[in-house]
Length: 128
Image 1 (cartoon, helix red, strand yellow):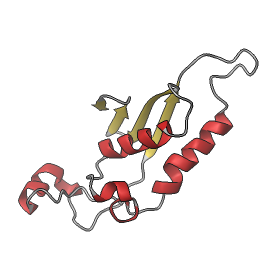
Image 2 (cartoon, helix red, strand yellow; image 1 turned 180 degrees about the vertical axis):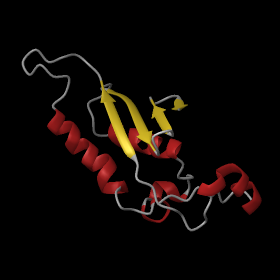
Image 3 (tube, one colour; image 1 turned 45 degrees about the vertical axis):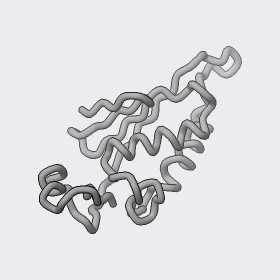
Image 4 (cartoon, one colour; image 1 turned 90 degrees about the vertical axis):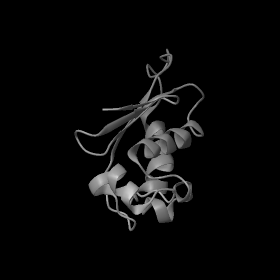
């Protein structure tokens, strides 16, 4: 669940900004997350990174802290940060950066719906 309700805005401003997603009590989402890594291909393994390792990092950085959670109540990061899809992407990026080998993470895509996709590459956020 996410809040899409900023404590620093009035109820009217929240409704105008977040529309149907505005709800002080939160609402549910099923996000799809796509993680892209890049780097040199290891001549022995033939891989940039072992996918089993990547899945373990994703389990620790994404699934454990976020899956089946009320983001605003269960994830300390979102007690101060509005749980928009953009900020979810930043949270995932930061969490993965702590686990992955340096420089290998290329982008994080968070799909809120088929039409609403956020792409985060560490510096800029792209909303599709």
